[in-house]
Length: 135
Image (cartoon, rainbow, N blue to C red; front, top):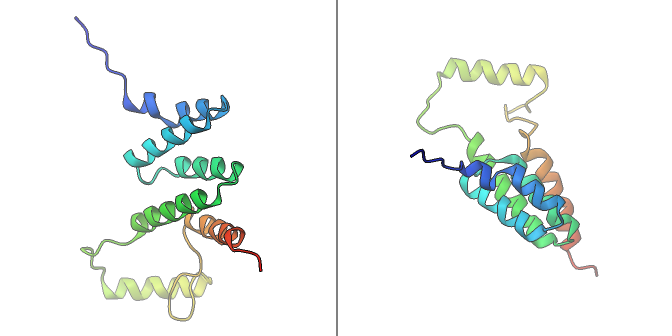
């Protein structure tokens, strides 16, 4: 007897979530995207789709929560490992190269954020502005 297992990705993958989304079943799509994020915390598509769903629903608080979670996940991904110690000469050359190409400030700090962090940070500012009470 042959046993066939469905792959988890097929049952709750992005493709299935998009089907739910296009079928106007937003709650199921949200649940699928949240499951995807729980399994793969750096799934950019799942974060983006969740943000879009909440934006369409004008649920800015939940959209902001998703944006913050996504930024945090990708910052953790891009953070250099503490165990890796680079050669001082290599660090100095890297900083000099970044400065000379205009990609770093005078102190050697990068001027641009890696994607998707950059675009999500800009979106975060827009959502926070919408959530501020008008006086």
